Image (cartoon, rainbow over all chains, first blue to last red; front, top):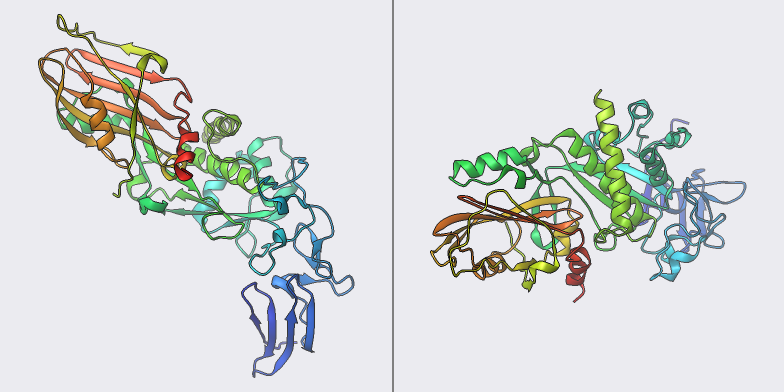
Length: 309
Length: 145
C-alpha cells in the first residue's frame, strides 16, 4: 500500500513494464498480437494488461466495457450488439472483416485498439452543453461525464422514447468511439482551416443594401457553417469518428442556440451514429439518410423550443 | 480563402424548375427573348459534407440587348468564380440596361436550391426540385473520378 508504481506502455497502451518509484522493474511482459501475455517478471499485482484493459484473474478475460475479450483466442466472447436491434452492427459490406461479430478490431490488433468498445468522448465542456441541448430538459441532468470525459454509461438506465435519447444511448453502446469537440474553426481537407460562421438573412440583406444592392428578402436565407463530421477512414483516427461543432465564438458568435443544437444532433445522431454503425452515412439526395437526418433535425428543433418554454 | 476548382455544365431550365416566382414583371424588349440556362455547379464532397449553407452572389451589368457586359463577384466564399461567370454570361436578360444581383443558394443536405435574379422591376426566383441535380452523389463522384 501507498507504493507508487510506474507503467510503461507500448503504442497500444499495453503496460509492458511496471516499475516502482526507485526504478526497480516489478513486471516485465511481452504480449502476443491479440493480447496473450508472455510473462518475464511479475510481482506488482497489476491487472491492467492488454491495451490497458482490466484482466479478470479468475477467467483471464479482458473487460472492454461493453464486452469481455478472450486474448487466448483473440475474440470477444459475445457478439457485437446495438441498442436498436440490428443483425450485424457496424457492418461494412466492402469489408468482410466487419461481418464477424466476435472479431477484435477487425483482426488488425497491431495497429488498432478498441478504446472500450462503446464510447462518446467529450473533449470540452461546451461540447457537453451542445449534447445536452439536443435532449429533453428532464433528461439533461442525467447526462454526465466519467473521469475519462466519456459520457457516463448511467444514461443507459434512462427510459425514454425520445429518438435523440435513444440515439445517444446507441452511440454509447456502439462498437466504436464518437469524439465530439467545439472549436471556432475546423480543418476541411483541401480547403484548409475554415472558420465556422453565421449570418442571418436580415443581416445579409442589410449588408447588400449598404452596398447599393437590393435583393428580395424572400430570397435571402440564414447562411451558416456550424459543424462537421469527419470520415473516420480518412482522418487517421482509427475507428473514431470526430464531430466538430462551432463553439459559438468569432464569426459564429450570432449563431442561435437552436441552430447549434440542430447541427449537433445532425452530426452526432445522423452522420456520426450511422458511420459508427457501418451504414451509409453521407447525404444521399433525399434518400434514406437524408430522410433520417431531416427527422432528427425536426425532433431536435421541437425539443429545443420546448426546453426554452 | 482557398478555392477549389469546379466545373459547370449547362442544363435545360425546363427540366429542373420546380417553381418560378415572379414578384415584379419587367416586359422583355421587343424582338428579344429572355434566356436563362441553369448551370450545374459542382461542389467538392468536402464542402458538400460540411454543415454549410451559403449564397453565392454576383452583380451583373446588363446592356440594352440583354447581354451581360460585366459580372462582378459580390460573395463567393468557397468556389471558383469561372463557372458562375461563364454561366451568367450565356444569359440574355432583355429588360434594358441595368445592374442585377444574381444569387445561387446552396443548402446543406439539399444542394443548390434556388437561383434569384433581382433588379429594378425585376425579381425572379427559381427553386429547384429536391435532388434534381443529384448533387451529393455527384460530389462523391468528384472524390473517385
